[in-house]
Image (cartoon, rainbow, N blue to C red; front, side):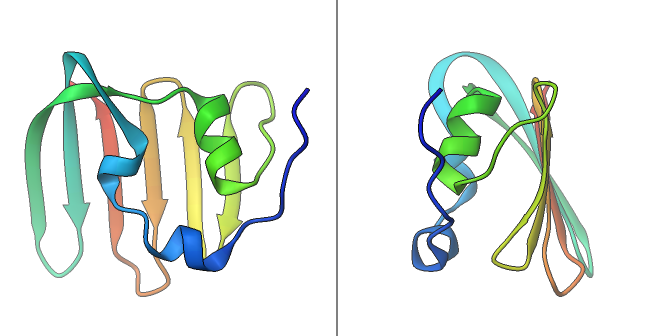
Length: 96
């Protein structure tokens, strides 16, 4: 098992939704919920739960992530990622 590093706030702050997506076949639905809801579809697929856990410096439990990293609540399971920010905005990336 790889060594889990503590989250690096500077690294996490600069992440965008593209950081969690790899090129490839498939479609993803990206939904931003805030004062208004924006939804778009893009080509690609989510990185694996293990890859994202390593990026964020958190551990997985039963193949899922449920953690708070630099004030952002992160929940992930296969083919679905949900981020909830301190201001209440939410972003969901899921297989379409």
